[in-house]
Structures are given as C-alpha cells and as structure tokens.
Length: 93
Image (cartoon, rainbow, N blue to C red):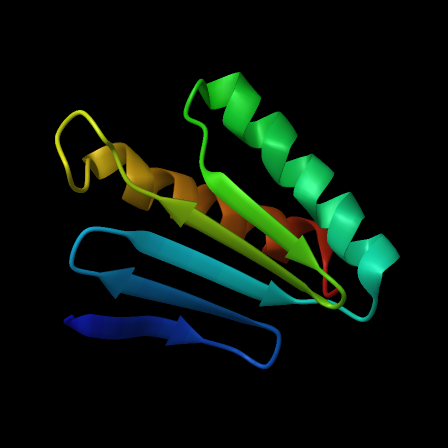
C-alpha cells in the first residue's frame, strides 16, 4: 500500500493512503479525545460527509473513503483540511 504522510505535528498527522485519507490526533486523555470526536462529528454532520471515527485513550483517528466509488473523493481532502482548521482554532489538545 502506498502511504504518503502529508503533515506531521507533535499532536497530529495527516496520511493519504491509496484508497483512504486518515487523520490522527493525539490528545492528553480519553475525555479530551471524546470531546474532539464530538466536534468532528458535528462538522461531519453539518457537511453531510461522515467518516469512520475511532476514539481511544489519548487518540482520535478519522478515516474517509467512499464505498460507491471504491476510493477517494475531493470532499475527503476538504474534510481533512477542515479538521486541521478546527484543531488550529480550538488549540492543542
């Protein structure tokens, strides 16, 4: 599988894979990870573009792909950028 790490910070990374876009954010604990998950879900609902979200202690992983086209759509990249902007706006977790 081809993997390209586009952005890597101390608390997050954005990875493009062949058929998926994955955004991972490191948080300080589970409560913060859950709060971030909720903010991401609000954004996804507003955009009507729903990713797979995995919430773990200290980490949130968001993955986009489209089953109907078996791959990526430009909206996946737009959503990743919007999450990055959300993290910039609300500060570090």
